Structures are given as structure tokens and as C-alpha cells.
Length: 162
Image (cartoon, rainbow, N blue to C red):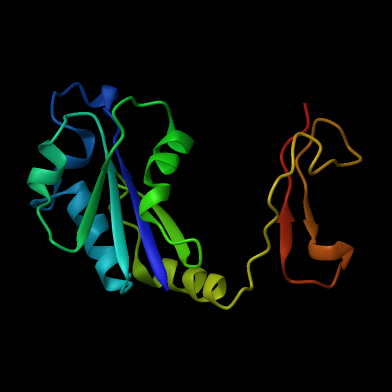
């Protein structure tokens, strides 16, 4: 099952507008509208939109009974926005996170990623504290094959050491 989380809570300070960034238009449609169309084209079981700046303007402008809206009352960053939506997302689904102000991402770009994730072909590791992913080269960022097998197509992402 595919669920899509669209992050749309940002203010868009550089746009110098009181309108939420995702509601600015491109080709006659709000930026967010293009992203929602892409999510629908991917046939997601659930589409969740995290909104914040501008209050109810985003849910009102994007009225769609197939969307679930989650308020991020205080904009505390991307990770915080995702955390606000977690109660709406299933633990056993693939969740694709999209940005509501990136309207030109195509399904032909995303579909291979979704297919690989659904087939379990993406490497991942859940961090278990600060030392979860130590590398031998301090100050750098590495990607290591899963299980240490150099022939593996999957990789474990590692955080940058400090």
C-alpha cells in the first residue's frame, strides 16, 4: 500500500506574500494542486497534507475528499512536520514524502522509487542512538552496502559524523 505525505506548511518568506507558498499559482493552478495531481496519479491509498502557515487557507483551497489534512501549528522544520502526520499513516505501508512547493516532479520519476520501495529493494537502517552508524573516516558521509556485502544493490544510509 502506498501513502503519500505532502509537506505544505511553509511560509515562503522569500516570496514576500501573505499567501501560503503552496497556494501561489503556476499554469493556473496552485503549486500544491500540481503535487496533489501527481499523488493521485500514483494511485496512493492515502494522501496526507501537512499545512501550517496561513491557517485554514490551504485546506479550503484544496478541498478534496481524498485528502487528509494535518495542522502543524508551529513550524519547527521538516522532521517536525512529518512527525505531526505520523498518527495518520500506517506502519505497514510505503510512505512517499513530497514537498508541496515542488510542482514539476513527475510520476515517471517517482514510480520507479515507489516500485522499488514496495518490493523491499531500498536499503534502510533505523538509528539506535548516536553511534548507530559509525564510519572509519570522521567528518565524511558514506553509504555502505547492506550487511557489508559490496555486491549488494541496497545501501544503508549513514549520518555524517561530528
